[in-house]
Amino acid sequence: MFRNVVSRTLSTALVVTILGTTMPAPASARMIGSDETLTSAQVDADRATVGAWLARQEVRDELLAMGVSPAEVEARVAALGDDEIRELAGKVGTAPAGSGVVGALFAVFVILLVTDILGLTKVFPFTRSVR
Image (tube, rainbow, N blue to C red):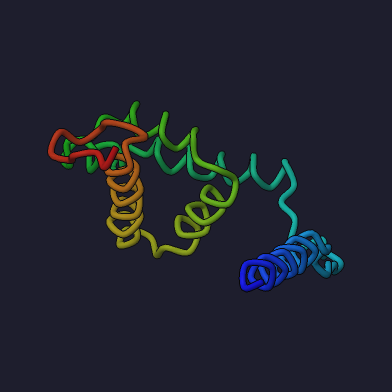
C-alpha cells in the first residue's frame, strides 16, 4: 500500500513537471529603430577608418616598439566583428590628435592580448592560452 502511494505521488509529480516544462514561454517583441541596426556601409566606413589609422607611420612605429607586427594587427582587425569595429572606430575618431594614439594603441594591445589568452591567436610569446 505504501508503495502505491509513493508511486502515484511520483507519477503525479512527473506529469506536472513534464507539462510545466513543455508549456511555451511568453514572448516579447519590440520595434528596432534604424539607429540600432548596423548597415554594411557603416561597417565598411568604420573598417576604413581603423585601416587608415593603422596605416599611419607613427602607429606602425609604436606597434613595432611593442613587439607586434603591423601585418598581424591588420589581420586581427579584419577578423573583428561589426560591433567591435564600430567601438574601435569610435575610439579612434574621438581621440585628441597626438595624445589619442597611445590610448588607441593600448586598446588594440588589450584586444590582441585577450584574444591570445583565449587561444584564438598567438601574437605575443609571453601569453599562455586557457585552452
